[in-house]
Image 1 (tube, one colour):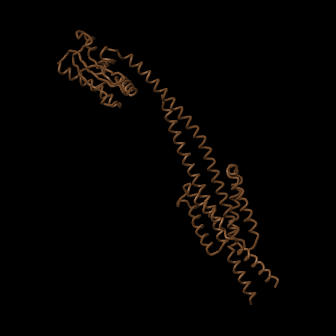
Image 2: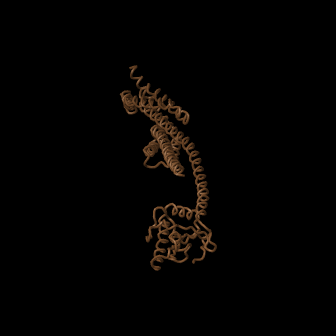
Length: 117
Length: 267
């Protein structure tokens, strides 16, 4: 009996915890912002992380319509970080290319200087 | 009866919320390892301290939730966020290190570019002065004809029009001079002594002048800047009576225009 009521209490607590989740509108806005920011620096469909972010945002929006607020929040939070990682990776890649190009130019200059009489 | 319904509903719900606890423990463990490696990297700490802190906070949250029943999904979620924060922090660190390297290399590049520009400028000025000196030592100023260089007959075999390799140095000097003075043009004139057939000599003198012109053109001088003339036995510079005099008369002369490209009158 004690065990039964304990279970019921736990279940109710968990249920009420789930149900009282507010609509994560602010989180969705942040996520959308992060995704468009990633696109702005040049992330595209080749980016695994950006694709993940897009998928999760779509799922989060669907969950919002179903009023599954907790699911929506979890998905949107993950999507935000996916997008931020996509952005960071693109920026690193670009700096890598810049570094390579700079090294090439320096080598060419050194070579030319070496060839002078 | 109704109690039974509530309990089974609650159990169903719990089952639904909970992933397998093994999965959440794994996720927590992976996030923890990731965080430890990121946390110990001084570059990451320096470049992305906020992301490292967030990775730690998310991890602590996942860890706390892992001791509650029915929170497996939340554990996995916060472990995921922690991993992402660690990844982002590491990526920011890589970016910062690259940017620092780029800034250093950019300075190096500017320094080298300046050095090269100076070296080239100096080179051109020095070369130009040196060549003019060299050429002036070879030239003489012949009144109306302007500057003239004489290429002696030792540059050709007897009766042949092919320029010998010993002429290369002079040819290279001519080319360099013409490249440094792009507006100057030249006239190449061939001469022979008076031995043999006059018509043959005229032909030979022209061919020798052309041979010199060909070498200059091969070395990159525009053919339009070169005029070629053969004068045969005419205009000797010495008596044809002695072999020494005849040797002096067998020659190719290069006449330079002034800096505006005006050549002196032809003979």
